[in-house]
Length: 160
Image (cartoon, rainbow, N blue to C red; front, side, top):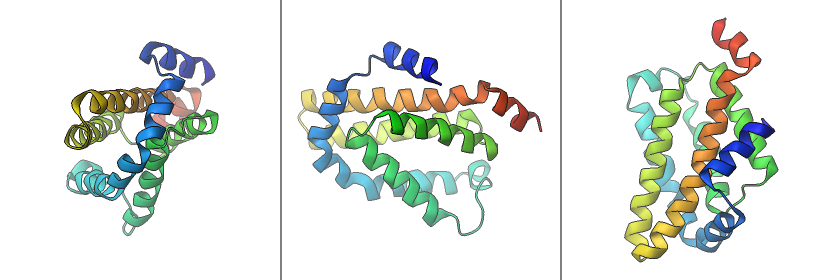
């Protein structure tokens, strides 16, 4: 995972400056968590192929998980433990047979939500700076999750 992570960081140009930008705006962007969580799970539960991936009554637990993820991202909490957790999230996606197309589609919606909120809240230059930092983090996270599908673990699970 370490080599894949470094490649993603290098190619997206994710940096400590991105963490700083996110930390600086976290008081405002963190306030969007409830709206983000509702958008995220309303989308998943409103689309039959993804709704079918959930167990009855599971939504509150999943909402808490995505809220924590969002708050960690917007706080710039992208340290080694965060990246390791993204790898584990990928393994959970494999266990649940979640297609990368669903994960990438939802990452797109996550990024679009965040961009729209930034543009509505900050002046354009600051909005784009904050969004670009968020996009780099979420692109790396999506890449790590997707990369997990190419591991021997995934081959065994998906092939089963």
